[in-house]
Amino acid sequence: MAACGYRFGANVAVRLAYLEAPRLRTSTPMLAGYWPNDPFGPEEDAGLIASSSAEGKLLPLAARPALANFERALNQVCDWPAKRLQQ
Image (cartoon, rainbow, N blue to C red; front, side, top):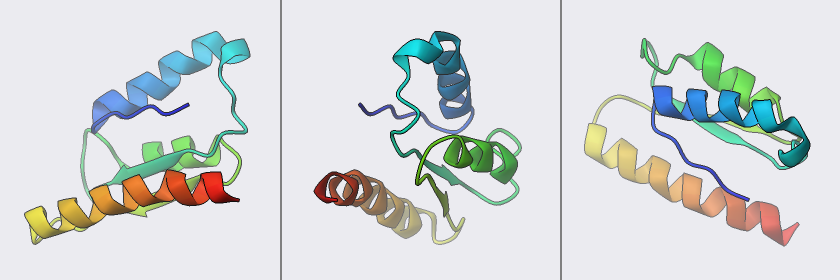
């Protein structure tokens, strides 16, 4: 199972998923990324998402250079589930 949200939307998606807790497999690792000092997706919220699952991971994203860091983060996001599935 995979879910992807961007900034505030990701936090809302995860919180709404917990309303259907019997259907949510919390043993599935969750990866949560954040930009430092982002008021709409703060590190604290991302940390709660990552810690709510087994082997969750928190991924900080540097603000500059934006395009290069965003591409690096997307690559990490894509590689992370593949590595989890190989275990």
